[in-house]
Image (cartoon, rainbow, N blue to C red; front, side):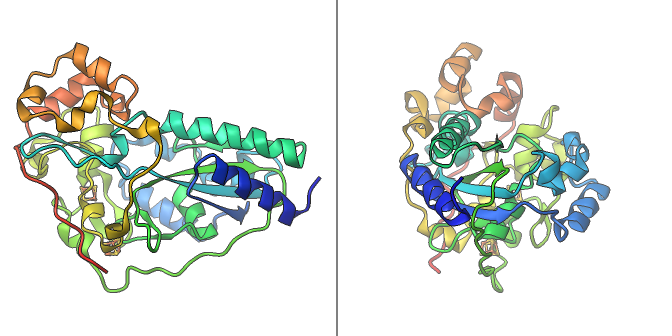
Length: 318
Ligand code: SF4
Ligand code: SF4
């Protein structure tokens, strides 16, 4: 078995080769700091229709309950900022993370490849891969390892990079040299709180999902509530407003992952094309996309209630 330092060197080398933009490590411990805030968020019913968040409370806070003998949590970052411009004026808006193939599949393929390659250097490792699909507090681990800080919009932000990236984790039973957290660089800025059209950011880094457009257009099984319809600002799947206004996203650069590219050039579709979107076209174009999470019927019901709008605001320079 390699030392914690050599295991880390091998890990970083494979992560880079596989296209991850950052890879950092935390010791697998109980998340003491996060426990009260998670409990308060759940008690205040801020999780909306995501009832699954009530399950596995202990596992969310302690990776050793997810992977017996866990010693390290590896946090990975993968850029998804698209090269394509947002849809033409008057077309519905889709959150940038959903432009291409569903990130769960893309990132998980990379994670499995990373674990296998790493094992070939290090030897036997017991570990599990996570991409937003199991009880792992990914932002807490990203913060702890220094991938970035948790901004007031509740996204993890990286200096000089922004927040348009996926997070993923490997929880493993070997010791790997840990990294350190970075400073919070939100400062006195409140742009995201001021810009959120539904006042869903109820306190710095605290989102009330019941008010969030992203939750209403994706997670909520029912149609978008009538009380929210005037505030959608053209968002048909997700919402990027609190990222678009963030000064740190001025630094975003396009991703290099071909599987994140939009199918059949849908980002250039005119508003008329969306109006005639059939289930067959939705299935063909978005069959592998995260839009399947909403599904055709829900997506269509949202398309029918949004008002046509223009291009998003530009993030100011820092
Ligand atoms: S995603 Fe949209 S609705 Fe949700 S907190 Fe951000 S700006 Fe508000
Ligand atoms: S908009 Fe300002 S306050 Fe909000 S996350 Fe970005 S830097 Fe932080």
